[in-house]
Length: 188
Length: 382
Image 1: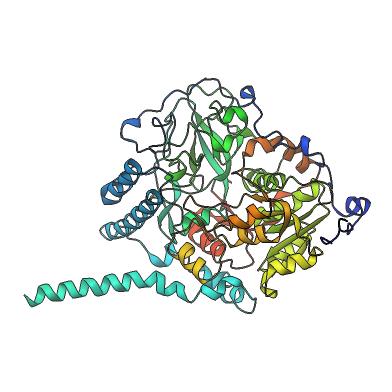
Image 2: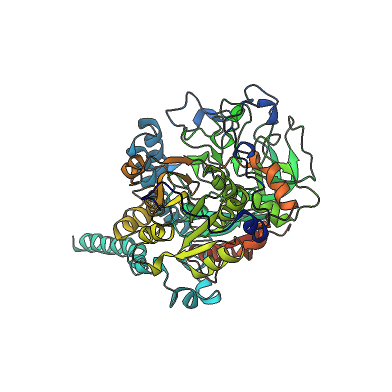
């Protein structure tokens, strides 16, 4: 106990642990673990056959953190900046370092604009967003939605009640706003 | 090709995309046979990771067969069965040269605070992930390894992140023989961390969670003692009681940003995304470890600030070790442990979901339905 110098007694002996746990203690030596030492200088071990990698094409238009001197030699091309969300994101990258909360919060705002804009655009395609299939909500009926949640004391159930409000709320508010705008225009 | 595509928070679908192409001489294109959904994919799915763009494909845990290689690739050829670590890294920068593969400086123009990760938003470089039929693998001579003939495919898949990260989490705890190790979170990473703690000589391993089915797995798979924090008024006090009022020697945060937290934490983090995640698990770790103890963090947190109890960590003289796992550095040892039967990675797999049903897969995992611990995505090439 901590009020005296003596450490607590071991609950199980080494022999008992070895008998109970397959592989107990095989990595006992801290100096012989894969992460030790953490900063081993061993460039020959990586498989790289370049001092500095050849540069990927297309860096001219690629956004980057202002904490980088240049666009890194290799980068992802998953979803280039576009539209209003692209302008918001580019502003976050060009104006604020990663040390600024504004950088990340503006990017999050760009994400919301991207999601809403993409949803609106999808309504004009042959495959509009489908809130049933895309949320996987069908699994509630096929994979024990009720059984998994109730009578099991799950901590996250405490906050489940607010999910519909927060998910549906912005759409309801947007609907009310759109309705009031249309009504005002109609009154003129 | 068919690929999972993000449509906005809580919405994903499978759609037709172009097969990725070689964009750099050291790229390979891999035909995916198995992928997985990781707990940290849920941060993207929940809209918590900044710069997650509609149209991107998630998935940083995958294995497959090499389909095409770029002109400078020397170590792989079409037809090779490969496992690909979740880190995208160059192998030659200041950080890679020192074994810090998860901190590579040459692959992520969007940030210097985090390296490159497949399918993990533009904050991590803007790479498409492996929850698809094909994926672009940069630096093919550096990241992937050929899957040994004796290794089962699902075991190889789980080594691309989950097992390696759990093992790494135990390593970051700097465990010495006889240590009492508390693992917060009985998801895949927590289960692997608990199991790995024994290999490093732990004397007690205590796993804390709120889901009984996961705690049952912690007892059977990881041989751990368990505590359901819902059954106690204050889990920190319970941790003190069970350790003779000393506290654990090592506490491992295997939860990360997805902790539920109190109402305020839940709203600011999970709902309004104004924190890098709810830090309740990390704060419990700080409070329940003994003075002078070690905290290991490999649960994923976003880059936005979190209200972490740093003063307690300071006043208790704690050592905080943390990083994303440099996966390939762990592989040689993990190969041995799997071959020797000390670790059986796919024992925790509960769901095998076809790619076409991935929206249900995400919902099952996110809502913790059907006693889900680890879902695997299977493609037509499986």
